[in-house]
Image (cartoon, rainbow, N blue to C red; front, side):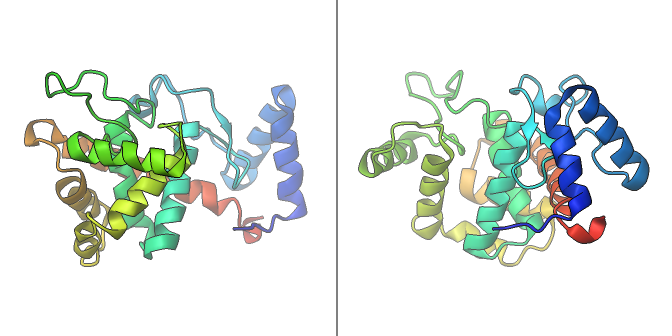
Length: 224
């Protein structure tokens, strides 16, 4: 995917990338003129992203975002491209994965609910037979990093194309982010009702959708 940036936008991104006082001044000017570039994250204010890594520049817009959001945005783009999902439906899917991993921070379940088990692994915290299948997939594909995007999305896609395709059928009849989040939770991840916390999943999905739309809006030259 390619983006066509206007001269003014390109200049702004260069200033932001310089950091320090130059970046601060550029951000203030952008907020004043168009309302853009306001901070997308705050580790002190957002419980959803507490403890996540240092912010980076978005590959798509150049705006400072957290690595976890960059992963979320890429997942949305890939789900839209591969399965024709709307942005809202894809965000509902990604909100679930965010919740499962604490903002893509914990790829291995910290305290397995099933005693004696290895616990969940990866974006969907695959457990039991599905974890075994994930590990087999990694071996077959020669992928050693269980936390890499390619490894996780690759296996997610394999499941959706085969054993877990029913969730796609269910999503075809959904048109809003809340219902999409519930369907993915109940049909694809199937957590125990005691630990489902659907409200938290919806909160994550809506937050990701908002930030995705803000990020992508800055790639449109017409905004300037």
